[in-house]
Image 1 (cartoon, rainbow, N blue to C red):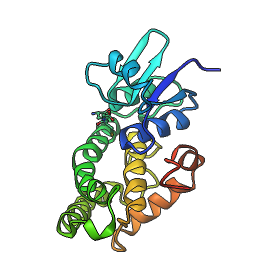
Image 2 (image 1 turned 30 degrees about the horizontal axis):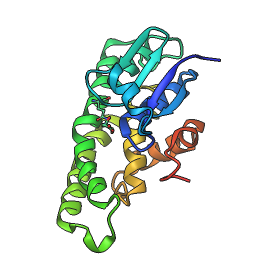
Image 3 (image 1 turned 180 degrees about the vertical axis):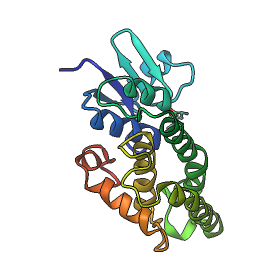
Length: 204
Ligand SMILES: N[C@@H](CCC(=O)N[C@@H](CS)C(=O)NCC(=O)O)C(=O)O
């Protein structure tokens, strides 16, 4: 049994992509609820960033989801292809997921989460949905007719599966015109890693 610990927050897209990466690379980690009052000071003392995910592997402490993914990519069952061009592509799409897809969806999720529908700011939600849909053009282009973004399951699959999963849970669909992305997401959801890692309170 692995002694790894992941300080986790189920609905956090950065944590979800790390959970997917752990599952897909066959690594086990004990998930610790970072939000519990007794655990918050524990992981906050470990990381200068004060964010989760935080992975502890013995005396190795790794924070920042992308650094954790790179750590896992260095292990067998890699999350990165071998060809330099593909490695760059994987990293760029992972970053695009964090910095373009994430902020668009954040507008929708932060507006809807924990609020009755009558209080939603619909203009904010609409702006988020439009930004999300515009951002999909690039992804559809990058995916083309391939099964995966880089020819194998890699960083973009972890990052975007978590984002699309949250989008779906908050009522944001991939439009019909992006058939390739819809089919890609359906394939990701059919993988055992999806059900094993999805936040229970959102995806039953
Ligand atoms: N760049 C960081 C971002 C992580 C992040 O923003 N995590 C949020 C949750 S989604 C967090 O820890 N917020 C503080 C908290 O929940 O106490 C990463 O990729 O790991």
